[in-house]
Image 1 (cartoon, helix red, strand yellow):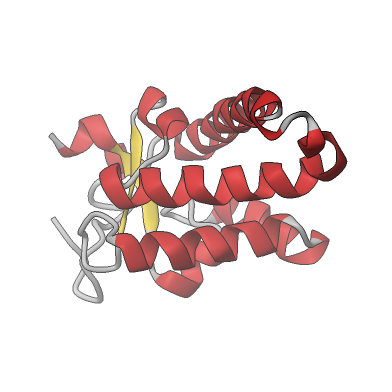
Image 2 (cartoon, rainbow, N blue to C red):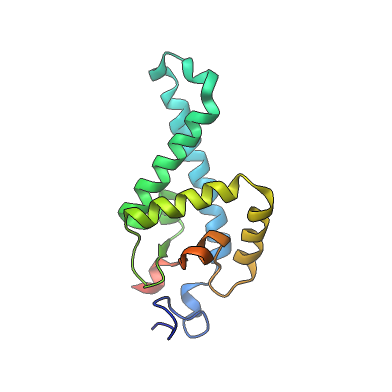
Length: 149
């Protein structure tokens, strides 16, 4: 079920694993962004409303924790679980804590800069495994969870 080069399934032999992944990744991103925003809003009263002065920073911290914890535990965020996709490493395994941290940091840096984000979008839409730039660097890929079972 895997390539000869790494542990990820071939997009040509197992296209069902990568079917609709670009759309699902986008939908999961929107869902996760809404959840992160709501969590951040709910934390404001706990800071005696001082978080209104550093709302952007608080949102960044919530986003990092949200993504790292969910990727380390289930290899997918809640939005990804709703869309039935998950990440796998270059060896075909689920993410561990280290991979989740590096993946999240690269994702965050690339999301905050225009050129790497554009490259990621193009790669997700054109590569066989729908990998973003951070996925290419780490050798990871998102695929359909239900097709693996």
